[in-house]
Length: 375
Image (cartoon, rainbow, N blue to C red; front, side, top):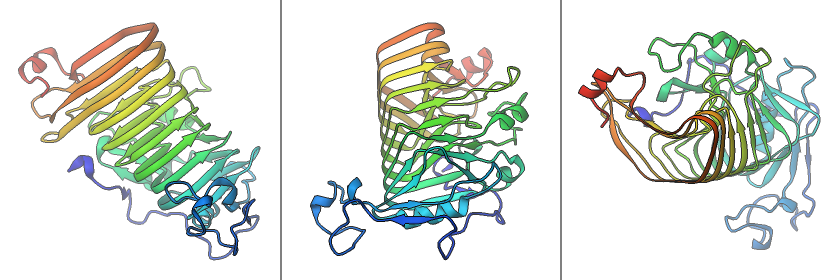
């Protein structure tokens, strides 16, 4: 099925980061503040050192550090991948405040288990469009690509730092195109993507300038965001961020997004097909297309379901839409339903369409929609 297609390298010869066999220069492994008796770092050293999932508590985790980048082309992808392996199963990757860590190669992080990333500095992706369009992870759904894929279980990302998509060049070169046009081949990478991930917790992180969607959760379960800031801001008044959704979920169950601020040019949150049990609370959305259910029904023969979505205490400012449902119509579309959706204490100001039920998505002529309504 199209929606369940696994990711694949965009080209078979794509270059990826490799794990160094020895300590990279400038890296270190720091013992836990409270070392487990016997010198162990992993599991099985006593439940009082672990949470209910068997994951090491913060004071019992070793920390792994790597060197920072010296400039915006100094790629530390290999070092970062090494650190993720070394911190896996009970440790923390620590990216220090005031430092920038440049990622210039695609990264497959699908092996994660009981790992923390303390992001106090900045992760900055290169804006080498030619490289990223030839080297990425590709998904059939709306022809999406990403810099990296996070998968596994018990993953925590927290700190005071920034995940920077470095999107200005991407936005400029995308001008005049439409992401859903069949002839569009200018694919842009998603800033953060999980696939087959369980129990992911992200807090206090800044997400800045993604080339397209900021977050896409695919085939994931029990994911939470708290106190994050998502911001898409162009340095050129004539170039606007395009398709800069804050969050999207696809084939995902159990997501909590709370106490967060979003300043983007597209959906604040969008439930893509087969999203269920989503909890949104205390959100501030500025300049967005609203909190959207869908779109669904894009692909012929596909069953799309969106259900059990709860959004409470949402402030929607200077936006085109507020609460929105969008379903595809036309001769060749899919089918499905949207049910048990709650918008409560939903405040709108300077919003063109506070409530939108669009059953003729995407750009369907009214005559065609009447003849072939959404299913």
